[in-house]
Length: 322
Ligand code: F6P
Image (cartoon, rainbow, N blue to C red; front, top):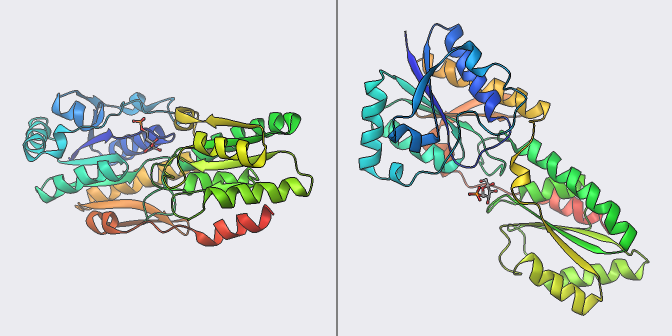
């Protein structure tokens, strides 16, 4: 009988609970023992773990956040920290680990595998910044949260004939801004991957103003550095286009909420596959989804892949927002 450990690490993402549930339930189904490690690698180093059973994961599939809690851990980035972690895992006779998180969390899992401790990664982050998988758990829910916010902002934007800049998360990745900008019908989408000057944005606004359009939504990714902050852009549009501008930074609201059906199903599929891989004796792998098929890949290969940006979608959005 194998003993599997599971933890969530890094920024939480809606659907992480569904993934934990899938790991715990499939592991128990196949006769394994499961330990839930609280607060990610930090909790591991503090020996904060407990055995989970079928009911530990009852009633959580619909809940946002992570019942195992999450954190970012500097100590685990050191070899000393990781040796301590492996010692604790061995103390509890844990044979292998499932890590649910983003690239930082996968780095930890990779290092553990290099030290001979089997680990599998499940992608959980609202950023969708991992190239090897079409989607990460939490992205769809976050996108829907952003769309809901844009729709509400659009109502008041229209009433007051304003320009509303909506800043969304995503770290260095523009996917959340791009997809939610398209679905929310934004007039302009600003992402770190595509060059756009503040002069060009001002010009676009003036052009739409000329044809009588009096309100406008600009979706801006937080990772955009070249044109300054959302407030810098507000200043420029106010001064040069005479617009009445408001800025909304959506912030951590994007990380919460009940996961969408898509995220729950994705998390269930990925969690089940992760356990199957461990039972097959596999290690140093990550699971993902491509063309709606669940795939797995070498963790180092996955981490080395550079995220590509969907320029075609960006160009399409530009055409649709003339
Ligand atoms: O990686 C997820 C994410 O929400 C990013 O989009 C964002 O930049 C960051 O985490 C925020 O981190 P924190 O919760 O530490 O403020």
